[in-house]
Image 1 (cartoon, rainbow, N blue to C red):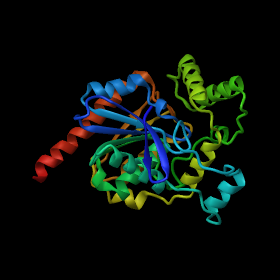
Image 2 (cartoon, rainbow, N blue to C red):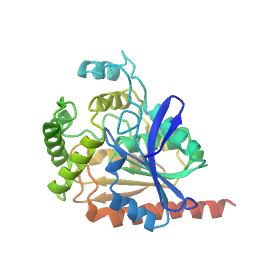
Image 3 (tube, rainbow, N blue to C red):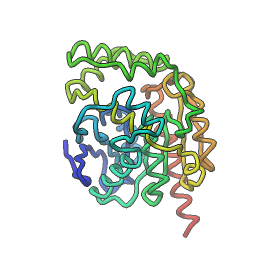
Image 4 (cartoon, rainbow, N blue to C red):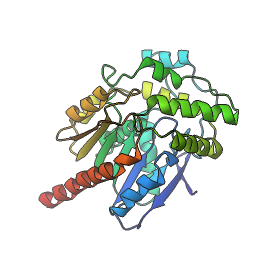
Length: 296
């Protein structure tokens, strides 16, 4: 897979569809590789006329890894308390995304993020609004700690130490997937994805660095309230990692945002919903085109 240099970070990415088609940037979540965006979902978007770009955030997949020991639970708490600083913040991850657009010579894109990826996408829209044609925020929250809080037992899974033993790591990933997913969860698909992810790049310490970035970043609510980009917010009613209140607060904060709540989706993207989600993204992208027409 190709990589591009963004400042001192190498980002691994893939591009699908016609290069002249409207660009759509997919931003993955905590610890997730670009492969989290399933080929079938990517195909749904390409068939609807987009050029789809997916990439590995730093500390995930084949992109650059942060040097040094990952933050401990105590370090994360100190970052939350404001007595320590993370290695990087969501703003830095947003700059990575914008840098990728620069390297691909793209003035702007439809930006779609899931979970932490949606936090990054929101930050891109707030800090680099001219680079965002439309925003889709999936299963995420605003950064306000009073909303979006998940089941503590589920959250703890992401702080568990993962041993570098292939079979154990894969089984732990499958268990974690089952815990956060909704009632459409497919254990065989989860096994295939966990195996692919381990074999592509096993880097459990990256999750802690990314968690530190989330914990060291401010509440985005004021920035979201100032957005003027067509926005779609998607959330699963069965999400146990980021509660539905996070999605509701995101939609409420962004002026004119559309909200799509999917009854049998958890913190996952079930294939049964791909066409509906892709159609909704087309809808918000079309709103961008209409806004451009009315502007000129």
